[in-house]
Every structure is written in C-alpha cells, then in structure tokens.
Image 1 (cartoon, one colour):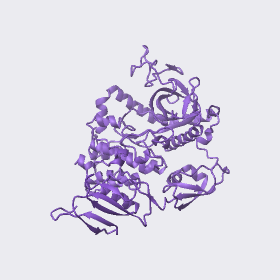
Image 2 (cartoon, helix red, strand yellow):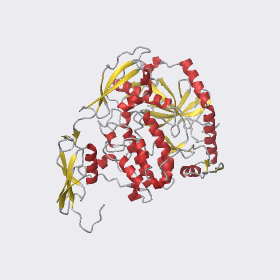
Image 3 (cartoon, helix red, strand yellow):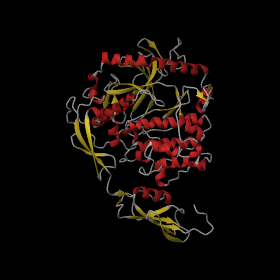
Image 4 (spheres, one colour):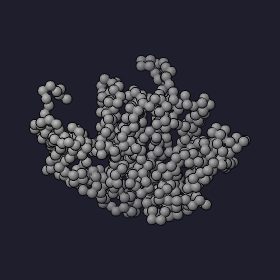
Length: 573
C-alpha cells in the first residue's frame, strides 16, 4: 500500500519489493483486517502511518506504525475499549455505545493522563518510551518507540525454561529499580507478566503494555486484560484497591516463573486452596532468602504482602554471604571492567543474547544495531521536529466533538475529583504542585480502605484562578476501625496466623479431631468470611485438624495459641 508516497509493508513497515511483496517478511498488503480497527495505511496527525494491528486488550488497539518525520518505525496505541465503543467505518470516528458515554470520556481522560506521565518520564533504562500523545478520530493515541524484541515467555522457553538466581538478579534488578522510580511518580503497571516484559537484542528486559486501572480489573465495565498466575488477587475483586503492592505480586510471580520454570497457580485458585510451592522446593539452588522474599511478595492478603518494590529489593538482597547487599546497575551499552583494572574485557554473551543470536539472522541483527544508532542520533532531532509540528498544527479539537482535549492533555482548569484516589498517587503528581497547596487529615472511615481519599474541602469542578494556588484539605482514610474476617478456611495454619497477626487480631489455634482435611490446615473458624471483627475485642479461633493431643501455651506477643504437642524425639523447628 502506498501511503503518502511511501511504499511500505503494512505488516512490518519495511519497503515493498517490485513484485508486491515485502522485502523482509514477504507479506502483501491485501491481507484481511478487523473492520473495527483502523484501515491499514491510515495517516494520523499528518505524520504517522498506522499499519496492521499487532495487539489488542481491554483498553485499546496497538498498531505497527511509521513516523514520516523521523523516518522510523513506531508503535501506536489507540484508545478503543471495544466493550463500550464502536467505529464508523467510513470516517474512522470512534463512537461510544449508548449508555456508556460518560465512562468512555472518563476512561479516555485516564488514558491520556497515563500516557502523558510516561512521556514526561523521558528516556529511562528498561522502559520503552512514549514519544507523543495526541487526539484524533474522537479518541486519543499514544506513540512509542518501536523496538525489536521477543517476549520474555518465549525467551525463557527458548533457553530451557528456567534461569539461575545469578541470571535473574542481573536481569531483573534494573527492571525493579525502574519500576520503583515509576511508582514514585504515581505510575502503577498492573499487568506485569512474561507476555508484557520484552527482551531486546542487548538482552535487557523492558517494561511495556502500561494500561489504565479499569482495564486491569476482571469486573470492570470494559473487561479486564489479566494474566493467569501473575495478576494479583485484588485485580479479580470489584472492590479491590490496586497499588504498588499489586506490581510487587506480579513481578514476584514472574521471578518465580523464571527461577522454577513453572507458572505460579492463579491467585483465584490459591484463595480456595493455597498450593503455592516455595521456590527452594522446586529449585534447591535458589538461596533461602530469595525464596522467602518471593513468597512474602506473593501473599494473597494485600496488607500482609510486601508493599513496595524497594521492600522486595531489600528482601532479595538481605543474604550477606550472597554478595548482593549492594547492587549497581551497569550501563548495558558499556563493556565491563575488571575490578582494580583500567582495561576493559569483552563481555560474554548473556542469557538472552545467546537466544537472540540463535534465532536472528545476521542481517536482522545488523539492521537492529543500525536502527538503535539512528534512533540515538536522531533523538534530539525527533524531539525538535515534534515540538515544531505541535506548534504549527496544534490539535484538531473539532474532531473530538464535546471532548475537551486541553483538559485531557493535562492542562488543569478546575479542581479534580480526588475522592477515591490513592494518597501517594496524588502526592507524586508533579502537576498538582503548581495548582494546589494540600493539607492532609487522616481519620477512620468504614467505606474507604486505608490510604484512599474519602473527602475534599473544595468541591470537584471548582474553577481555578490563574497563577494562584488553591488551598485544599484532603481527608484520607485510615481504614475501618473494624476489620473484615478474611477467608482462611483451607489455608495452612502458618498462613492464617501470619494474616491475623498482620491485622493485629488476637487468635487461638484449636486442634480438633476430624475425618476431613489435612493436618496443619484450617478446617473452620468461629467467624465467617466478611464478618466485621474488632481487633481490640474479638479473638479468632482457628480449628485445625490434629491427630495428637494438645496443650496450651502463650506466645511472647501475648496471643494465646493452642499448639499440637510435640513428641520428645522430634526436632524443634
């Protein structure tokens, strides 16, 4: 298809041959496509050519694209939640379905805000950057740099299925540090999995597929794009609040997969019967502290789980004898230096470079290297051209009907709705500093979880005065004075004790004779799941199957526990 005078393959954006076939993928431009997608060859913003769709999720469609100004391939993400919108096939306009207009507009604003945040992060290691966000066809688009990669899942499969801890540490620590930096800016991924982590030609892992929160919830209006075995349990709950702890669960699950060669069980299945096997039982070469850290990061109860990526990093590197107490991420583009020497040594091909070399022809690798160099050299030129085009063209607001693109693009003109937002996300929003002077008040609230804003002193929609900061008080929930009884039936007694201990709830372990269940597992409790309990008054009784006699003992914390009696010959654990 000839687009803007360029004879490009709509499947890979390479040049077409004289015979009508692509010189790289041998494809033709008469292949069928989904009529709900953009027509291959569509010109966006008089600059980007959209080709075939490469991926679709609950949030929208990703297309292979070509940047005419920068003369390079790009990826184009279109906000197109198919569940609540459709497309006019004649003019490509995106139209909300009847009854979903408000949701479409609200989520569109979330989409633009997320993509703009990513664009403002600038170049970062282990992150494929967003280079442009614009409006057209009554929707919004985000343009990202195109990088030739393979998904981590395929790379693992191609290299035997699992990795050593030394390999995992080298590959994942830079990713964890980047993820921590994103969290500090209020950006939560919510979809980390072996399918959304991409391995480039240098063997580095890159984060991709950032989506709005609504598309990472199983019970959302637009449907959830989740990953079995890697999505956290709160993502399957209608009232499950997501945060940094959600990414902690997912990235820990990916590390679990890399170290064991086994996909973790789905979190929904684990809630029925927690059958997560510790890593060291599947791979004895993995250090004990690493196995324990991953287990702590994958606890089902969010409050018991490691809460931040920094906590996960610390837990992974606590073993003094493992020489991992201090981790310095090296620039992957620089050769390594021997300690105490000024000479450089040629680095051996790493885990994924060997895979790339086996799977890629020399010509493709040469093209990749050339592309990386061209992108690096042309980065400043691209940015300058982008600014120039923005200044000259602006945005076609008429294409968006009643949607205010200035508002969506981040120009704050009125007080946002802070209620329901996570307080750390608000604090991390750099744009708010110029418009608001915040005061925070913490108090108990039965309707909102801890850390969530439940009220604000100035109503949403209030106009802001130009060049003047507005003082506003945000009321932040400390959570309910009461706790909901978690579902502990079927879990191990150790896990149940851990959950209740983290909740600050007193408990007893009551061994009972039973024909059902297994020893050491909770058969029932004196409070039902979801029942309100007062941590200062109620005592939870865990009825556990026991085949021996028992005696009462008291822990140092003052919690009375009834434990099975040990025989004289047994070793103390």
